[in-house]
Image (tube, rainbow, N blue to C red; front, top):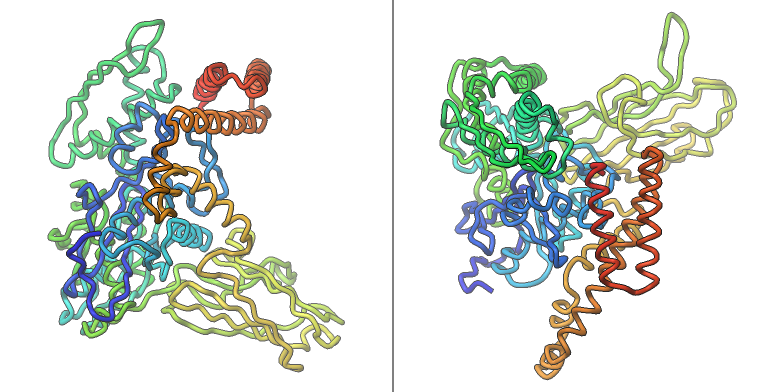
Length: 614
């Protein structure tokens, strides 16, 4: 534990975390100021990349990023884009949910928190893009709890950036626009600062627009050069594709300060036992042409958020550029042209969100309670229920979306609306809850559903049902439906701080994460007697390694068998025959308890799946 512990009287260990697509960072309050907490390796930001190495160790950060090209099948990057989905991520023969991979990143960050404050559970404020859905927010909270944090609050990234700015500008009044272009997402918010009161007026964004997309445009450009010269597409080769992606990131960074970049890759891939290389030059203008439509998309959203806030570009007093992708000179140019003034360039775009999350943590813990800073946020989506909606000249059809809390409503908020029964003799109503902006619920995101029973039978339109929504700062939505004539009501919480609908699923995730870390390390933590610890280390090392290797190999083999059986439906006849042969080989090697044979067939299986890009 670090001896320079900055805990002040009454301060609870609570930190702010920016869990980013490309990089993550963690902030804390020291001397009533937000600070970046360095990793144990001294890094201010941590690459959001996870590697399970050849010895089945979990590696997070720069070392994992450096291994992305050499071991793409064992490495995962940009997992934030998959948050909220049930899609499994295949890594080193394992299948992990996106929140489980994110938990590994957060566990790495927690090491520095434990070093600062001591072992044990810590509270955390974690940031998300303002346009993250309910499912994405819940997955983020679950990742935090799987990593050992108590997730006190989820806040929007532009709001966090505004908090970092607001703490240093408490006496300023005016409108601030936060333009946040990160590795995988884009957010833009308008915030009003009034003598320390920070009020978000409007937010919007795109969860699939960021530096990753710029990189892939460059990958396509580089791949086309290889195709033109050698008549082979390097994107069909998993390792070549990873190599081009890595090179694209470097090119993008260099073009932020240089007008052109010479690209020299001696070996992109091998064809007919001959190395295929790439030697070309790309100019900044060519790069901008590749991505300018995406950048123009951010400007469209910026104009949209101004309209939502009922403001013009001339009304904005300060513009904050947040996120590493704002270093692209074209971004500065586009924003300057739109607003007729230059954005602030005295803030670190990679650290601002984490610092703002630390400010929110400080406000929550009480350390910054006397700062005079007060912040409000807005609902990122409209929320409402499914109703009968007028369709055509005189017809009605089910599935219309009735908004109860409009998008960009300041939270916390309570709103209610009254509806009536739709057919004669109706004694119950189904309350289907949605979030989104489309007039029909089928195009929105369903949050939940419940049934209100006991309505008196009457003619259609006679019985009145009041539906009340309460939405608080922690993103918890409570819905109440009440029959006015009888007073009978029902209340459900459809959006909780953590989705605990399946405790078994949560427990399974926890066990999966624990299994990724060496059991002998965990056993040592549980021994207090020195003799017990020595006894562990006096065990035969070869015996332990053999047992661990065989157990991990058989587990990996079983995972491959399941994967192959699942993927066979998408294979052609030849590939299916090869898959069946591999499945049989894996089963026989397990039955024979032949470690060498099992290792060989596993490697053959991995090569087969890499060739399929599965």
